[in-house]
Length: 249
Image 1 (tube, helix red, strand yellow):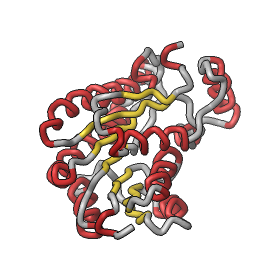
Image 2 (cartoon, rainbow, N blue to C red; image 1 turned 45 degrees about the vertical axis):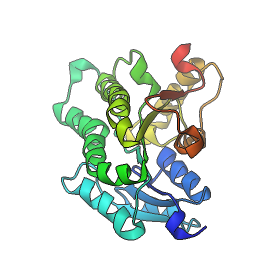
Image 3 (cartoon, one colour; image 1 turned 120 degrees about the vertical axis):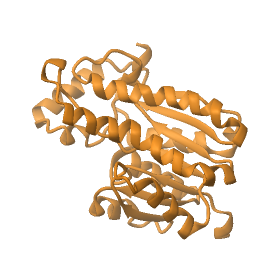
């Protein structure tokens, strides 16, 4: 494929898990991918063996991040077709132990960073009639005591998905979201859970997932890639659960 005609995707949180699988899925589909994450080591692993993936170490909450990410894509590839807001920070604490610093970190990463990045990317996405994908969570559609701030921030991103879909439709931009359920990612380690605690969480998740298994990052990446395909051109404003049926159980 001539590079001029390749689509270009920016994927945040691309160092591990869903972001890594998504970056590789777009690359396998022939797209250039700017893989964004905070740590250079995991990003290098994401890109290894995938010449269409370019790593970019950046903190999406930094003040200069939106312009830096968009300009990096435009300077390197000349266009931007897909923006995947996947970077996220989870939190796990009951209301009685509320930590404002931790809550602000979650909301800055999970909610405000996507708003800023979409704002910066609008001219480029308008030019290509592109697609915005927000990665939220199926727990945003139900009660989640103990992780209420995390669930609320992701639920707000669901709402933004619907609002942006209507607002940006006249510009030819589609906006969709995927809402993963229990997926095999390092989130438990990032929360500081012990192996025993992680095993207990997995048992609970399995008991509440009708399909009876933990999802793979590739399951979510498949949904993202297909929602961004031109053949899905009449789909916008949808929040698609990828959760083995958990949200309807």
